[in-house]
Amino acid sequence: MMQKTSMIRENHIFRRLYHKGRRLASPCMAIYYIKAKNRAGNRLGITTTKKIGGAVARNRARRVILEAYRLLEPSAPGGLDIVIVARSEAVRVKMQVVQKELDRLFNTISRL
Image 1 (cartoon, rainbow, N blue to C red):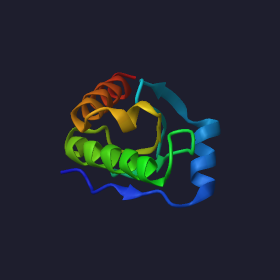
Image 2 (image 1 turned 45 degrees about the vertical axis):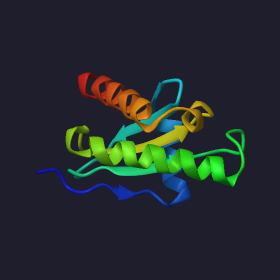
Image 3 (image 1 turned 90 degrees about the vertical axis):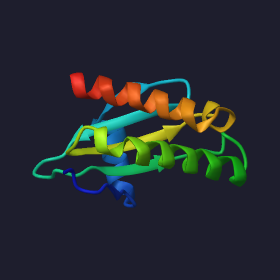
Image 4 (image 1 turned 30 degrees about the horizontal axis):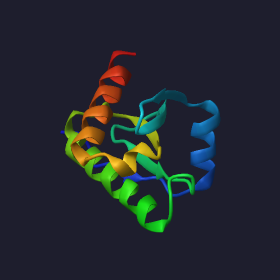
């Protein structure tokens, strides 16, 4: 069984992922990821910018992405640091659409 995902809170980890990580994108989100050394579980960070909208829209995007990740967590590739950057489309679509896109991106990561 895979370990539970912990949240990334430190700014230096976000910056490292933006600069050194690999990037995949979809209409709702962009994912930056890097393989972590000596760790089975994932670390997850979610970023939303003011381009998405006000605080309500940004918080909804974060909640939708976090719930989609939670549902896909057992099948997610392990041992990664992941930052998901929400795009404005994430606010407008249903959670199932975000979940489907996240699943597709995780399948792409697993194949690499």
